[in-house]
Length: 323
Image: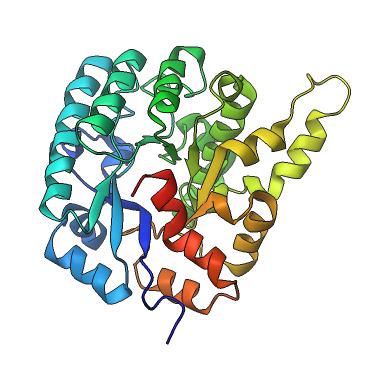
């Protein structure tokens, strides 16, 4: 008998495509193809078979990047409502296997807050996922005009999952262009995603939004985009003379949760447990960008006590996402 036998396994960063939204993608955002695109579109028998084969009971579905974050306010309002209604239908077709994170029209923060409330209260969504920077201006979500989203998330006790999208073109040009041709993965999961998403998370902490709304829960994938490893050093640097006194590590470890999506590393996970505690870690695969099978196999052999494994595999998701 293995440690996974008899345990519910909930994977919370599992992506899909809504073709009504994907038809609006342009440029680099429109490049996903091949078997990955096919798997993103499939939300039926083949996806469920893959889950069964890997021992995954539930996927929490979220739209692939950049979701609705590149859209203008008017288009974003329309498409977010449509995408969320379509996702509810997907979840209703397989209620024991799928749950969902809502898409939000972030270009209109007040409408995004209202759509989050509708999605949670009327559609049964478990929170929302926000992908990268906002709009053509590439705005950061920590700006005060976006704070109504955080305010509503706290009121609903619904988490916000901050997920990567393709990095700012100027950042790619300045930092990565010399290696893009030979190593295109450096722009995305190899480094670009981490660099930008970690910056977004640091800015959220420093902005003060989590002091004003201390009940907000923020989720980061990929074992926290390096921040559990860096939290002590960032906190130390911000205590030096000349900085505004700020408890970075305290706020990060209080308000943030991390998932194992696309990051099945024993040392990295143990770092996260030591810095944040097992209560702040949730299981995820990052399907279909990462195949289902390695994740449960990794958790099965991981040298970790049964109580913490249970929290990571399902207990924390059940509590935080009310599942």
